[in-house]
Length: 253
Ligand SMILES: [Zn+2]
Image (cartoon, rainbow, N blue to C red):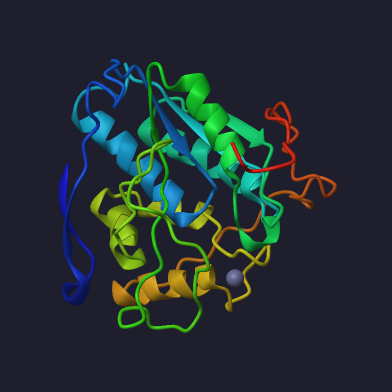
């Protein structure tokens, strides 16, 4: 699929396709996508579903979402939004939720490499893996002072990162281009508050930027339909097995 994304002053051509074979030369029979329940991973899930649909593969290439436990509600919000995207496209999306996180800094919104590596190794024979990461927008583009403290390298081995070089308003524009903007309300962005938003963190500021840049009315997150989305402080969603990957003492693999 080919797009021109973003507002006029930040527009960029963007192409996305899912090949027939993965980088190991194996035929792709399944798609995997990392889901945090946030705006980027959900836009990517919508993009993958749309691409499969437009190439006649929606019924034949099953999609699985993978979610790592983060102390900001990823297990709850990803469960909710994956179901909504599944309903939107009219096909089931499998969900492997509650993957244990080896990154101690949960609260900073980080995820560890160990579960990502495990899932890659378990599925690489016939699965194409995707993650919706992107880099911090440079100072001359980003209209707010908050910064991201980590930097993703150009080459990703364990997954493809089609959004790596896109800015938030450009990623965000995909919802509208794909007519998936109804999905925005089910995503959660704040990395400080699991319910509601702090308005101060990088993710909260970035979301406001995306709406403003595209001249769209702000869409707030629908409040959770349960009292305690930390599930007793464990963040382990009771609808799924848990945790599926043992927490290892180091992130060196
Ligand atoms: Zn926030």
